[in-house]
Image (tube, rainbow, N blue to C red; front, side):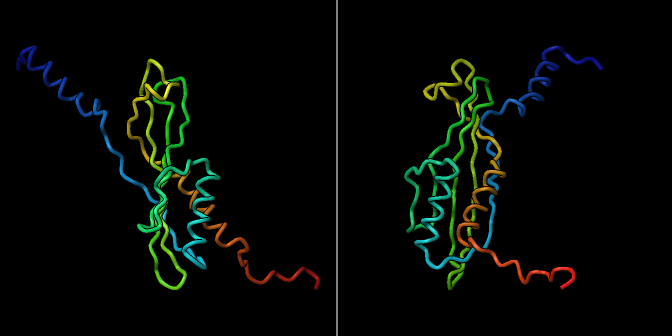
Amino acid sequence: MKIPMLGFGLIALLALLPACQSGKQHPAVWQTGELESQSERILWQISAMALDKEGFPTGSGLDPTTLQAISGWRNDLSPFRGKGYREQAQVNFQPLGTGRWNVRVRVKREVNMDIVKPLDLQFAKWESAPDAVDRAQVLMQRIRSWLNPSPNFGDPAPLPGS
């Protein structure tokens, strides 16, 4: 079977199109957990402290009326295309009743695809990247640890010979 050159070139071009998508969105990956807090105010203060401790700027998204906190962007630039990134943390709360809360944490990540001046934020070309799951786990654990600073490990085992 003879394939005309134009037809073969068109088929090859169509085969490469999915690999060239620059606007690809990645699915959100949330870390969830049930936490206890004496009050909503303490939960908010600890969450804001955890975001600060992890290097996320406060931004304008701390909204206790919607029970959602969205940090500013934390930049980590690199002189190489696609190696520099920025991250934004999102924390959502849902009351479960009498001091129990469902907490969801996500760290959204974008990479800088600018090749000319990748260290200059003015020229950055941000593209969606997979969520930073490890950073979200650290943030969730920090909130969990600060809400319950003295965990109960149960009764200690008796010492040998006693």
